[in-house]
Image 1 (cartoon, helix red, strand yellow):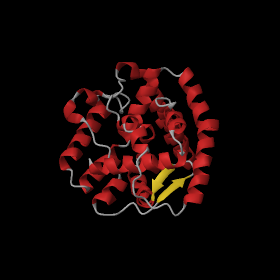
Image 2 (image 1 turned 135 degrees about the horizontal axis):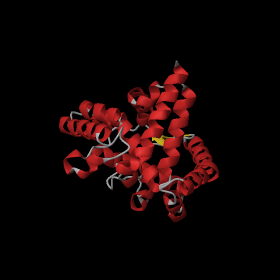
Image 3 (image 1 turned 90 degrees about the vertical axis):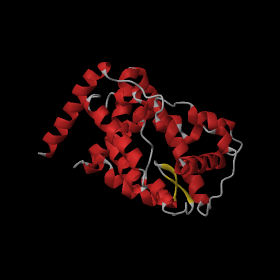
Image 4 (image 1 turned 180 degrees about the vertical axis):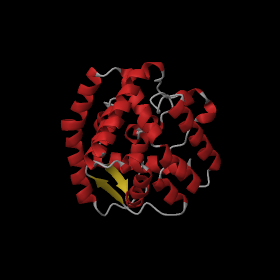
Length: 248
């Protein structure tokens, strides 16, 4: 039964990808591309207040993730980009962004942003129905349906929970104590978390990561090359990015 359900899901995804050319459209205001913390060079030069008691661990994980990017993620993304039409990659990006609607919707409600929650719900319904499960992004054509990028870390910050301290996780990248704890809340709301197969869930998330990376190859290298101290530059850029998102 589990295998049949997984096969059905894959079949639906493949069928929808075939229909994508009629619907796929990149949203120019895509939050996780436009607000990528690793391309904010001016902010990277600032020095936000954040405790870093785990600096030896963090530097080791920074080095690990750096090698992971250059040895695995970047080559995979480059190869995938070379053989996959942009319209397909945009559609996949739209699909996964639409799939994150429950996280954004619930956190809007928890933060008391009822209007933003309504916008998120409306955008999700339009993109799911008209955009064929979210592979298309017709809601982007309506300025009233511009969703906010909210997560549980931002919700905890609104309720007065501080950053705690800076920490870098292997594979996952930079975070704070607050945002690390908040990952559990967002995981609970993420639809992929309820797949019966852990391997399938991990594989789909990796595919999402690779597909998303095809749109920003070179951003990481640009900030790293421009920084005198890459570790501090990335730490400052991440904290500035999170602080800005919380204030929005």
